[in-house]
Amino acid sequence: MEKKTKDIDRKNKEKGKSQVSSVWGGRFTGVPSDIMEKINPSIDFDKRFFVQDIEGSRVHAEMLGKQKIISAKESEEIIEGLNQIEKEIHEGNFQFKRDLEDIHMNVEARLTTLIGETGGRLHTARSRNDQVATDFKMWVRDKIDGLIEALSLLQKALINKADENSDVIMPGFTHLQVAQPVTFGHHLLAYVEMFGRDRGRFADCRRRLNECPLGSAALAGTSFEIDRDFTAYKLGFDRPTANSLDAVSDRDFALEFLSAASICIIHLSRFSEEIINWNSAQFDFVSLSDAFTTGSSIMPQKRNPDAAELVRGKTGRVVGALNSLLVMMKGLPLAFFKDMQEDKEPLFDASDTLEVCIYACIGIVEDMKPNVENMLAASDQGFSTATDLADWLVRVLGLPFRRAHHITGEIVKLAEQKKCRLVDLKIEDLQNIESSINEDVFEVLDPVKSISSRISFGGTAPVNVAKAVAKARKRFL
Ligand code: ARG
Image (cartoon, rainbow, N blue to C red; front, top):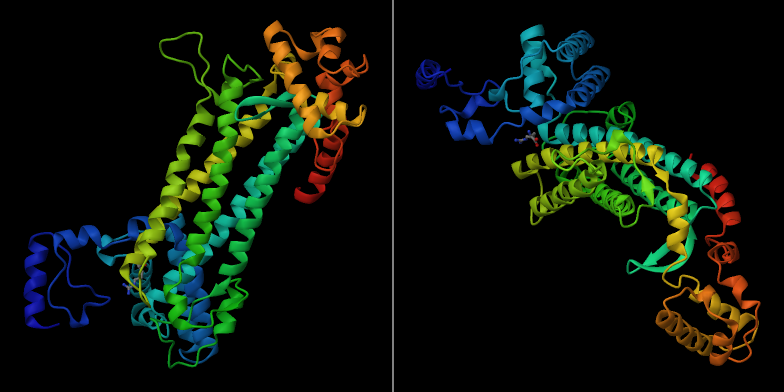
């Protein structure tokens, strides 16, 4: 080390500051400023993928040995050292150092302490740029597997609930106005479809990300005779990435993951909103368990749907993470920039948030009990069978639908004036509006009849729901 560097090191040591980096310090004489030491390190968060980092390094070392780029003995020593480090981290006996910036350099520095100069051979034919892209892809891949599993559990809870409630009647809404009666089971199965698409999006993202960047080195590839197929397959990738510049600068997988996560948590927020509405005194459609509600510190009568509110509220964090990464990536030329270190914290936060929200919804669904009478009573309000009446005028009297719609409108107006349900109107009242209406019409004005008639494919009839439940079990579970 030059004398000047030594002097600076001594002075900094006196001040308790770090020394010139042992990893990249070759051409540096000065040390980072205090601010740099604050802004630069990623170890506080990227230590989270130490498992992936060490696995990537082990396979890289194996490949270097196999290709005789390092000796077999060196390869073994490195792998043993890495095993030891992995154990130390698992057991909480590893000291992470901020002046070593990130997980990659923390592991390498410890390796060199453990096995001496041979440790310095691990970084042959790679760079932190391809290393971090590989680690992060592997981490996202594992997370996707966990989220897909969580989503299938949520689907299972919904399907089971739908099965128990295939013929429970509730009002279906549009514009939050009573529209037509539907079955509770059918309503729950709508969410099963949404979460099925979410699983599909995560699976697509996983498929596309599964190309291994390792061996792309800093940006241009390497002059060593590496075997990229070997490392790719050993690390569970389908193939190595085709272009080294793209490989080190691509964060599409993180963007896709966060897009899928955002859509998914938006679904969860919609579901939560329904729960919050249904749980209110005004609706009183469902009862939630103590496990997912809280009381008020002042109002003894309260049972607040906090879990659902939090799921709805946390949506902002996940969508925010997507936004944050989109803006971070915007306009970045090839290849690697330190900007991209900012990809991790939002993604970690978003995936943790999404995971806990999915499990919260599973709990809410499993414990939720429909208040069947209230739902039925509500579905008999708001002229919910008006469409059934119009359809009857078409089917039985042969009227064109537009005319039937108009006549039904007049009948609804009359019921509104009389402050009664359609079914409570007298046959004479109806005949005053359309003389050919007969007593049979009352049949279709009952919500029970209404839902049973909705047998078109994908419709709400209880027979359909029972079939859809069986199908959903096959498709998703
Ligand atoms: N800590 C960095 C990250 O999280 C690793 C890559 C650093 N590469 C570099 N050339 N500075 O992205």
